[in-house]
Length: 130
Image (tube, rainbow, N blue to C red; front, side):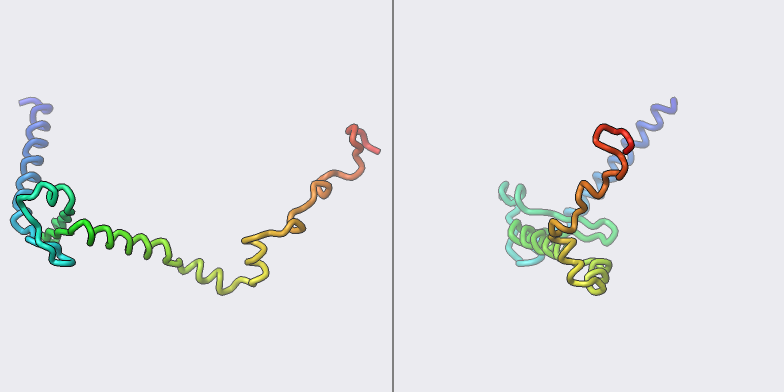
């Protein structure tokens, strides 16, 4: 048997094994939402399209979420992630002078250097030394 054939056979065997594990995990699927305990209608096409199934193979656990609970969970997670302040930000805010912080957030016009500050003295506009 050629090497190419052996590789194909191994891939096919692995895919069949994964499919078998997924099918077996449906036996562990609950009949209701794990958060609000709303019943899941197994015969409803709409429920199959809208409800979310989360499989954790390591723990051999399958969870079922209704659309409302899933959206609420995502919203809570996003709020937590976006509003969470990192330890570095807390440290910088705590140790920073309020006046300097205001200048960083909304600098005044005098905080920027003038263009004339960068012009070399001793050179005229024509480019010749004075």
